[in-house]
Figure 1: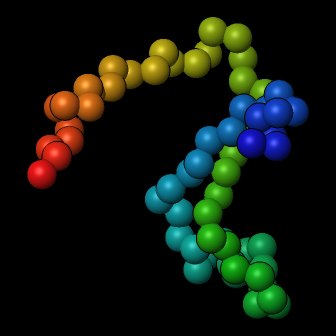
Figure 2: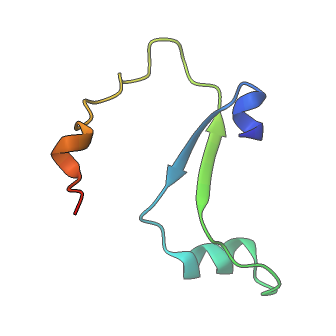
Amino acid sequence: MAARALGLDCGAMSGFDPHQVNQAFFPEGRWKVNFIVNLGYGVEGGHHPRGDRLRFDQVVQIL
């Protein structure tokens, strides 16, 4: 939220090998990676529009 408040675009990244990241960036073992977020300023018009979302009644069944 802080990064977005500063005008940065943010996106969570998945599919990385945490062991490799830890070896490359935290070889002393004091820190460990939990998740990766890319930060930056996106180009105008480079963003894809948000995809359609399902309606509440399509995904929830109240028992």
